[in-house]
Image (cartoon, rainbow, N blue to C red; front, top):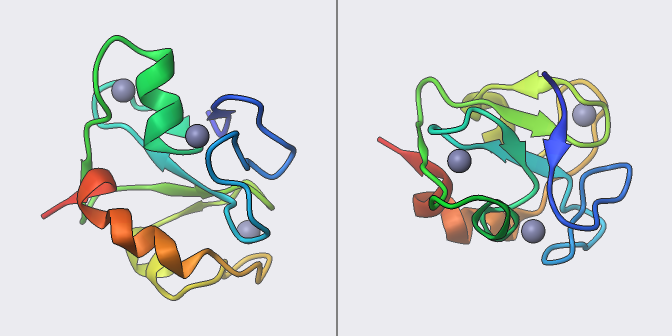
Length: 100
Ligand SMILES: [Zn+2]
Ligand SMILES: [Zn+2]
Ligand SMILES: [Zn+2]
């Protein structure tokens, strides 16, 4: 269940596309209901494009401690369980990962 899919992942869920210190969050695709390190990984590994989850029911996975977080928890900028910081630049891609 709490498995992260992606290309060339490290233990904390960084992928070939996004791999700075804080790129540890995995996002769920509404169609396949799996966690992916990023939408580029998803789109390269599937024959459909990443489908955003509704913001109220979405889940994100902390790659550091593998706890599942709500959007509200994710939005705070760090993991409430392990305190690892998230990459604030992910918000630039909000429309790809979440919908209202
Ligand atoms: Zn999918
Ligand atoms: Zn990726
Ligand atoms: Zn965590």
